Amino acid sequence: EAGVTQSPTHLIKTRGQQATLRCSPISGHTSVYWYQQALGLGLQFLLWYDEGEERNRGNFPPRFSGRQFPNYSSELNVNALELEDSALYLCASSLGLILNEQFFGPGTRLTVL
Amino acid sequence: KQEVTQIPAALSVPEGENLVLNCSFTDSAIYNLQWFRQDPGKGLTSLLLIQSSQREQTSGRLNASLDKSSGRSTLYIAASQPGDSATYLCAVSRGGGSQGNLIFGKGTKLSVKP
Image (cartoon, rainbow over all chains, first blue to last red; front, side, top):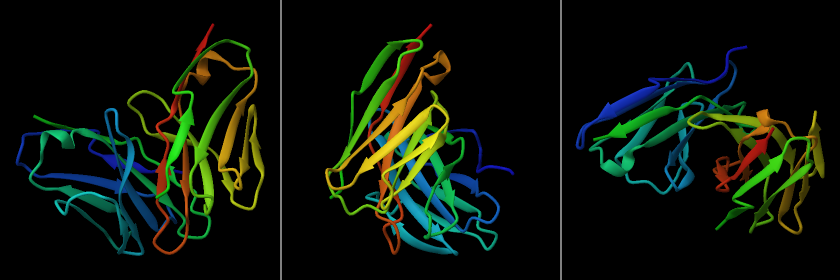
């Protein structure tokens, strides 16, 4: 069974640009979560989508946004990139609310120059 | 506000030693607790999930316990091997409704020396 996949693996952008990160959940999983892991800050929750709807978001500015498609894949958009957005962005999926065990993808390393 | 703390931040042990990693959380109203390992620059690998109604879970050389009332969990690793070297993360979820996201500790970086 294929795990959670993310693309691209690495992404280099300059300040002010926009970045789009993609995630495909494990087959059958309806929930997708996005987390940011910046150096020294630990893993911070960004966004949670379930059945196409945003269920919760973390303490991040509105320039962090995303969506979930009918096939449950998801994309994270970061507008007006800032240097401190440089981080590893991790996507996780789960079956939904019942068990809520989350399985993570390999991440996208975003570097903002 | 839920806060998760992991002690120690780093640990170095010789191969073969049994070891315990600690995790504490401030709000006992959790739905479940997960232990993960993360290799440098990589994603997270789920090790064990403990539901709030459970006291412990075991997988191979790993055993995780949960004491909700005291806000603590421990991850026991038996007969450590160099391949166990990684950062171990503990995370809690309140579950259901709008509380499904995980809240992470900052991890314990484990180094097992041959």
